[in-house]
Length: 330
Image 1: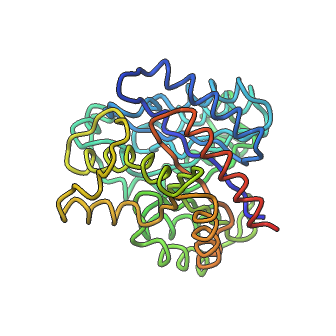
Image 2: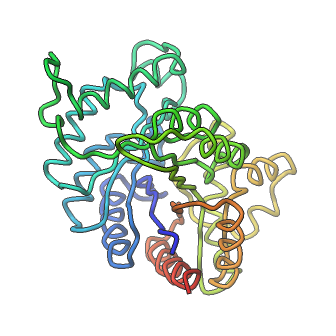
């Protein structure tokens, strides 16, 4: 059975606030744990009115502290925004508090706009040049060599699996060269998915962490009792995507009947590109789509994103998706 996991951005919905977002995320994580999801990941973003997971390690502690078995992690930490030592200490702390439950996914994008990136980092040094070096430095803090002068306390000697995240060929090449699991962001940037997967698998070099390639793919999944209801719920996601891609990020709006049909052709093209790996509909519809997707890609794991406006509907979508997962395994 292909494991399913949850990607949560701690979405902030119109008329609500971050405090409610964090309560909703914990509630969803508890449901995901009960339903047999493997992981619950949160992603670092900044200066986004609709995303509350900017202090990612803090929110991971909130989720891990309120659950007991599900793996919790970053999907991911944008490493160029941080000192590798600080991340090693943060995730060493998490791994000490919640042993064998913490994952660390690493991305090389800032997770925000360039002005905010400068506020975060003070410099915009090329991440292409620095990112592999930063990953190696981070690994060294978890697995220090004798005589190493700087150590992560806590962190040194702890089991914190590192993942490489990506939406292009760069991350695929790096994950393959370093022998790390690879998570592709096909839920919002699917264009290079198949090429990146093939490159990663063909160039993979075994490492102490991983002996063979392991691919996780992201997908937007919205499941409801009927196709019509699921499509209606998904209009919140569509509105948020259009707002973001046109430079007007906002809190996640309420669903809007017929939103896609009212859009100009250019905006429909934006959505079609962004949400090409989306599966929206009744359980039968989503089951058929996911079966074909998994057969085509051979994904080892699927991470689903579902930022629908109504929390009860979001929980229900994950419940129905878990049923779909079970059906696919039978």
